[in-house]
Image 1 (tube, rainbow, N blue to C red):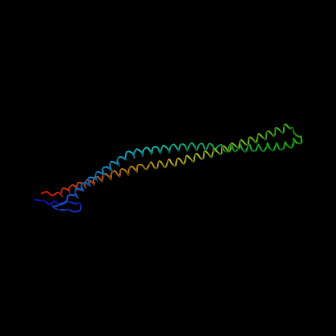
Image 2: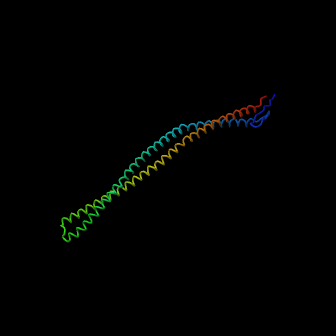
Amino acid sequence: RRHTRCLSDWSSDVCSSDLDTRPYQVAVEQAKAAIAQAQADVVAVRSDLPVVTTTTSSQLSAARGSVEEVNAAIATAEQQLTATRAQLPVVEARVRHAEADSVKAQNDLNRYQALVAKEEISRQTFDGARGQAAAMKAELDAAQASLEEVKRAVQVAEARVAQEKSRLSRAQAEVQSAGSGPQQLAAIQARAQAASARIQAEKARLDQAELNLEYAVVKA
């Protein structure tokens, strides 16, 4: 005697005493393959977790250390710039003083030159005035050279401050980038949870497929 079995085919019940079992065997194999794939996905995703966690932590630590280092460099550069700028008024005063001395010495030389021509002063006095004028001119040249040197030093110090501030911007950007690690970690965890949920769904589909296959086998 043959029995009629009812088959639950997800959306409807099928009752038959002569069913082709091949579609249900295929459904079972497909469900098994889907479970295997989902399990492989879970393993792959979870294998990324330690790497991302370690990388994120090390990158963030390094980026924060870089910010601290650059901030210290900026402080040093700004101190040097302040000290260099402080030299400007001192050297500028020296230049003004040297200019006044040089002008006076040159005027004296010009006056003595007229007097020596009239033999109203000695040649020795004239030579002394000429030597004084030359000395004052040399002092002025040295003072002006010092002023140019200080100005160049100020420019170098300003450039260094700007360079370090540029480094700070890059270091802060690295901190921000490394700080996105927790979001990446959360995304990986969400993928792992989704893969786990897919395993459960595929297991339920496998149970139903095996049940359908069992009901499709008609026994006498």
